[in-house]
Amino acid sequence: MRENIWKNIKIGFRTNKLAVAGLAALILLSLMSIFAFLYPVDPNAISMERLVGPCEAHLFGTDEMGRDYLARCIYGGRASLLVGFLSMILSTLIGVIVGAVSGFMGGIVDAVLMRLVDALMSLPTFLIMIVMNAYLKPGLQNIVLIIGFLTWMNIARIVRGETISLNEREYVVYARISGQKTFSTIVRHILPNIMPTIIVSATMNIASAILMESALSFFGLGIQPPTASWGSMLSNAQKYIQQAPHLAVFPGALILITVISFNYLGEVLRKVFEPK
Image (cartoon, rainbow, N blue to C red):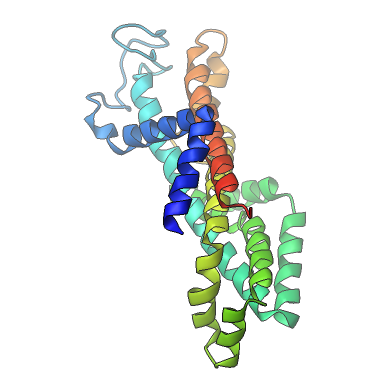
């Protein structure tokens, strides 16, 4: 089984060159964020070289306070990617628990949980994020919690559907008849068989979380100065878009590359794991 999956993944990447480029870009951006401390420039160091365009001394130029923009982009990537990954973990965990319990239990439990999901999905998520962020102290931790708690519904619906389809399988029926506890049956028999679906959904969720964080930071409600994120850098660039367009180009391009790369990666994984 595992050999077939790896074989299909290799075929998927071999036939989709854009996915290969996306994976390479994600690996490079992740490594740059993890080892940002190796770049010998303080991202918060202020100088008199303000709004300097890309040059030999500053490859990405400088911002309105004379800070090296390449250093800001590298450390901003650390914040944006960290929010994306942590939000994905939280939303996936909640969605898997709710979806698996709802699909496995059925009846009243399923009805109540799905009506809750429907109610939450009918609400304007981004508007709720702005309101919640206004009442909570802005920062990375609260951004992760806000995005994670408001983006799990789609995963819950997908997991519920997969769980319902597995309920009639012989091994699940036998586990019920033999008296295995609900938690044990879900963990041992349900989750391993829907893990490919969870992986694909989680991959897509990272891209969505990064976009949400960027949007919140763009409106000044996300990561707070002097800590940089790509969204907050775009927000600061609004004032100088004509005088120094590079302030918007670089973080905008990094957000675009990251989101597109995750989408191509998710597309390959979807094709690998979808039923043949």
